[in-house]
Length: 316
Image (cartoon, rainbow, N blue to C red; front, side):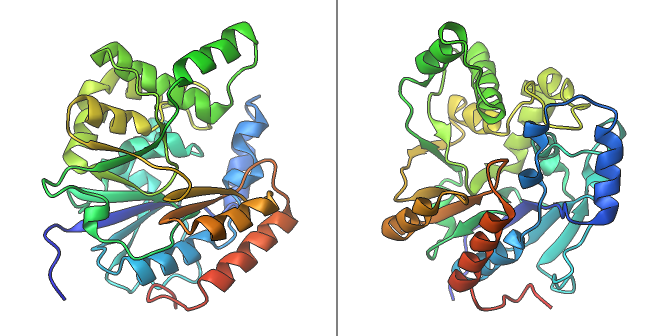
């Protein structure tokens, strides 16, 4: 097999919200706040073995990945073979400042990914509910010059539409959209460019040095202001800000995608499963949310088991 020209690592965030110890820590924390529970619902923390199936997709379609880092809060998946040399568990306290702990906010955790010890310059980031559906190579994520390919979905009138929605129709944006809008406006203020394309909500590519520069230099004050957002907040800065920065600084290459390349499944919507099969995309995401039930989660797991039935090298 031909050696890859660059080493590419993969980073996951993972939490087992079914763990009684984690639940006790979380419940003790939210007992002190009046945060909107829809921002921090069960679907954000429930473990439905998504990571196991995501790793099966990586083993099947991207065996060239160099190392896989799993960022957790003092947890290890019980099925994970931690003796595999490609796997490394990274605890929140290893990369995050004391003021940010405990942290139940994935958007904040993501600010510190570049601090993972031993992380390669070229790395991919994935949530545990994101999957490959076809074979990929490093050139699906990085150009021949080594710059990240930044996948966005087209939303040409987003700035106007969202302004009308919030300011005229008086319909507030949901948390995820608020974060994206906040992040886009930060880059607009710095560079005079408002990127209307939305993140494709799947595996993304980054350069560690640019990631670090974005958090520690370019957006130092903005990111530091988020360091005590232990729970999801409407003031959070989404990691997409770093992709928008890369585009503005010509350190990344934009690629618009649609559902035939990157498909988003809401697990409570049965029609999405059919559309996924019809589109046969390169990537897909199985999104859990406050709208999903335990029956929906059962259906999603059965689907993933059927799609990825073979144990990977990362399982005991």
